Length: 222
Image: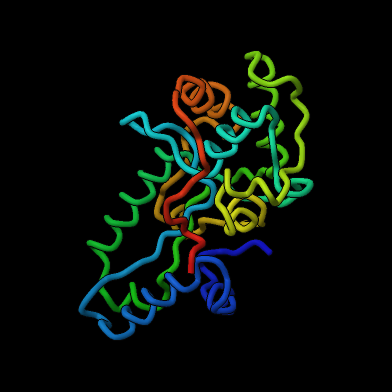
């Protein structure tokens, strides 16, 4: 299913147990209590890629790159067919600015009916698409012996996101940012695979020290 942010009824139909839904519900319920006294919105990005101004990369794809460097192969969950929407971190930043500007100038009565906003660039990739590019770049750099993606065994999930590995880097997450586009926002940055090859992977290959998976809180936590 492809979720659209101008159709809040589809998002509200998600079960309370869905990844990230606990966080969304806490915000939505507080929003109902505060009413017109606070303009509150939830912007939900898909895969965030790219390198920010401070030289920081995001979480999901860089973790898969570090996994490949540690284990010697480009790894994916299952066959990697699940699909996610994509957004470059700089396009996302502009999306937040667009949303904040709208919140500032829009009456609370118009904000309240729908709290949901997406931010995506119109491109969808499977996890296999991304992992295959990771494999290609690392193989050409002499970091791994084969570019072919392989399935990551459950026993290695500790080097990904632990018990959250499957929802974080193995699930589907497809959406359309209709509302931001109606406000004039549009994506401008390079696509995911170009960014991986030109920006994230070269930066990550310079890292030193052990890698033991992503141990911080992830958005899928309940």
